[in-house]
Length: 146
Image (cartoon, rainbow, N blue to C red; front, side, top):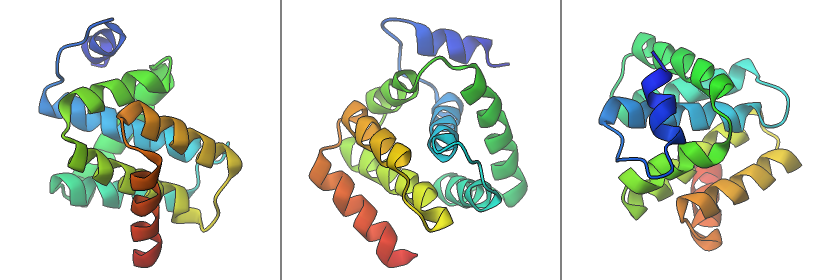
């Protein structure tokens, strides 16, 4: 199931991902961020499901299934660059700012910011082409909502 997506992510010059694959790439990136501190807490899992449901208009069951697929893809994918490149290539800047909000929402779900999570989000923002200021503003918007 993930073979074609992994192949397209590993291609040195990947084509724009179709919508289902782009969804899966974003979901896998959310999972990778949640796992970055070495703890994949239930509150983070629930937050990923809510983010996916809201982002894509999915039922709770559909969001959980997408997250489950993303967990497997995340385990198989070699690095974060592949996910971010797929998202950057297929998503407008304003939407990438919303991706940063979703990532911050997952990082902040457990009420603590970990150094590894902060470092990963700085790297991801850079890979997504989102500047530090806009990433910080995305984080602040999430903090106000939580």
